Length: 199
Length: 199
Length: 199
Image (tube, rainbow over the protein chains, first blue to last red):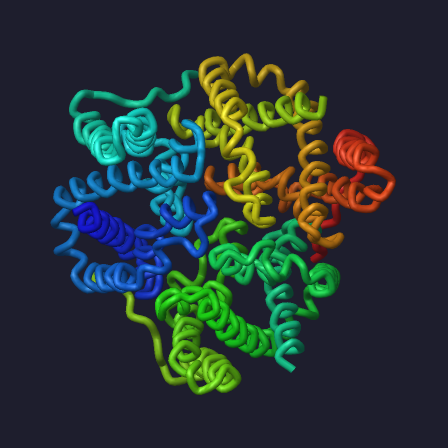
């Protein structure tokens, strides 16, 4: 079940990466590179930092080939994929919550404290998107989009995993992923936004 | 023999990095940084991902000092080096083929599957150039230059290594490097180009 | 004593990162991300390269939380922090010298040669700032600011550590950090500047 959700989240991340490549007018290879980087980049950065080498994702061949398949489909049918905007938004939120929670668990297993766990979870959720943005020549969206709780939602979800882990791994992951998703989905509706510097 | 070719490839990569630094108007340190990053960055990224730490290149002092020497020569005599354009093109293609094939072999030794091996080989060949471009404030050329088969040539060469390895390492490396070089050199002449997104 | 200076240097680096985030108009999360990346990014890159995983800084919870506290203070009181410009300049120079020297020692302990040690020291001193610049969408300042001996000062200080280490670790670190700080502080006054390419 979690395995199936991880697949779904990874493939949706791949689609958002491929769409960015199409939007930038990159060639087929560029689109596939952005799909792959967005899909597995965050977890790979986390794996490098906690010392799990080679990173888990680079040893999951069926997942990697599926990422490329999604990249090819987006490349070929991008107008139809773009029309799925709202669905992608929800599935991307699902992926964010899931990866942040599972990444936090990996941080716990590596013996990190609350800050390290939050970092491991957040990087797992948003690291691929940051790489995607930097490679596209853009400032990472997570740094300035005050009105879209994305990295901050992942961060709080990772903390919930840290705090709730003594209650049992399954429950902690569920609560953590739920926190991230709820913050992202309801944050904008409730008018939550991060402050920006004054003056 | 392979050792000598690796040196040659590394030093040509260093020259292309240094030329980019000169073109950007960077200072001496910036030119040497780009030379070093371009020369040993790809192999170092690969070594981080497969867990060979410190990366091999960072322990090869004679090679590192030679990279700096090339950087100094380019800094001082860049108009003459630029005049060597076609020669640099051929030697850069040699380096690309070689690093992609040797990087693929390192991926095989790390127990990776076909996608992981292709990634290890491609990163070895193009990772330094990607770092060079990002540090120079440019979008990596491999993402959008549809008419120059570069990363895709490295990718296919790495796959040839993967497929031909059971026939013997030497033959596999030869075939893989040859595939990459042939695709790069004849691709443009044959009008091969990667597709770009429609509409 | 060294411990206290490392804290001071790290927190000043955090302040410079947070100031960059404020200057760019990033939101609160962006400011805190830049503070953290600038403060612990250089040492973490070095730790990845020498294979110390997870990186030391990611296991130092009190330091990480202090970095965030500094980020929050800068976010809230940035005009007053900016008014401390000269003080920040001196403390930043202290941090640079210290991190370059301590990073060089870590390179020595990893068995690296003179080039590798210089690289480990320089990356420790400037790597966080390079990440900060790249994430902010800027070309790293160390590549082109010929008149501000910064990375080159770190590099020479790291070499002094390498050369003086046989005289005793304490003395070597003192001489190395002193070299970096002296070069930075007096370099501009003495009109020292790196050459830039001709023509």
